[in-house]
Length: 274
Image (cartoon, rainbow, N blue to C red; front, side, top):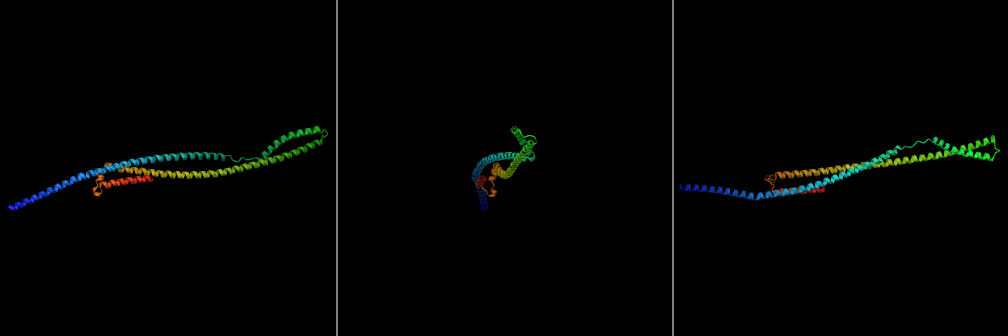
């Protein structure tokens, strides 16, 4: 009876000691984990926050500089396009004014008649003066002879006037024809030059449009990258402990910090390449 009681007491004491030892062991493990894992997790979180803030400031500065440079380039292209447009308008106005100056029609009959009238008026004066001089020098010529002599002189003068008028009219006609041909050649050269200028302007407009679209795509990519980074830093700031404490996925604090640092470095390299 005493032996059975002592054996039961010993078993009870043994079980109680084992339970106390297990509790003490668990308590020591919890203290060790709290003393080691807590500071490490806090240090990793602080390191990630500092790296994120640094990369955000660098990225924001780069995006700001890129936006300023892009805006300056766009303003320069707009001013250049405006200058090219004004020059094209001036050329178009000159071309229109030249086109409006069409070939003036020439009335050959009127020109010859005017030349004959001018020559006849001058010749009549000279012939009258010569007739008076000859009559005063030869007073014996009178009657029908004087009339025939005057008619011969007038016929000779008329033929001379007609020949002179024809010669001058032909010369004027040839000169006008050459002038019109020269105007036509000038208009053709001007048209070719304007067509080439229009093609150059169209090519320049196309290149400017493609360049502007490329700059717009680059600017949008920078904005999207900046927004993504800002969103990532906001989630980390608001729930840093949760992100760093994902033990179920098998990720510790140091791996997350290194991964975040590599991500920021890759983003910076991508911006440098752009």
